[in-house]
Length: 349
Image 1 (cartoon, rainbow, N blue to C red):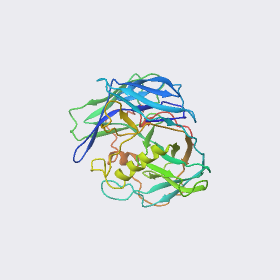
Image 2 (image 1 turned 180 degrees about the horizontal axis):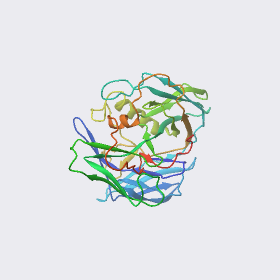
Image 3 (image 1 turned 60 degrees about the vertical axis):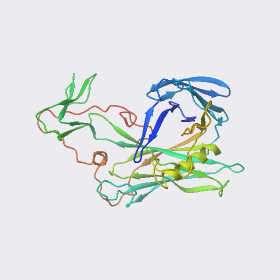
Image 4 (image 1 turned 90 degrees about the vertical axis):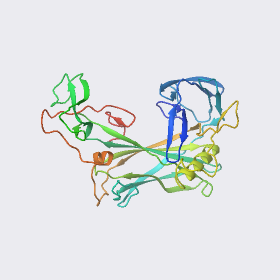
């Protein structure tokens, strides 16, 4: 969990991790008593989803404040983190993208996927060691909002051929035994819909050799170009403490550069959370606080000049959409989730 000074939900995720020879699984920890201590004041967190605990909705972090995580499991085992202080972060001065016809992402058939490589410039403050972390959120317009296997999509209380004029009842996919088990029907969105993609790579930087200098051309994302439609990339530049930087750097070195978490790491990736009654228990993960500089970068994709673009639907499903031709031409409702929204994101052109 990372406490930030951005508006919106602030929280942490607790889980039990288990590795086998070829996989990693996480089981959410439910029913824990979780608190964050802010400058000595205890604030209780509420479980909003399985293993997800959040601070009150109005809470927002502040540069200079100190934060510590404490929690107790249902079996009374207690844990706490080290104290983290939120440090200021410089703004992103410039963001830009370069079209890369041979991007890193690939489909199962091994063909390369072009990418928009996105870079940022920022001024590193002089006189202090600074540590950075980048994460991104990509919004792509989605044209299809439901897929039914051996079934058909059903809604009620409105004409499916017209835009929604009022409340509707979504039935969803209803089985149809007349269809084959491998039959898929796909349904266009009846209103605006955007899929959300979160960065998966750990991207850190320390100003060891560039303290106080203008940092230019820092690669923060390689966005696959599945379709030539414009998209919105939300870039977040975070400040880290020295401890948080060391943890994320070690994590990246062991998972992105040498293998996966299922491999035997050269050193345990212990974070700053410990069992208060058993110092030998290894707790993976890091609780930190970070100020965030945000840049909402519009990917107009006017520089996309060549390549094979098979569409966002194909990228997500590895097949072309199949719209039913028999019966009413039903459209599907865009149902909001962590990876989808029916609200146009801020910064969309």
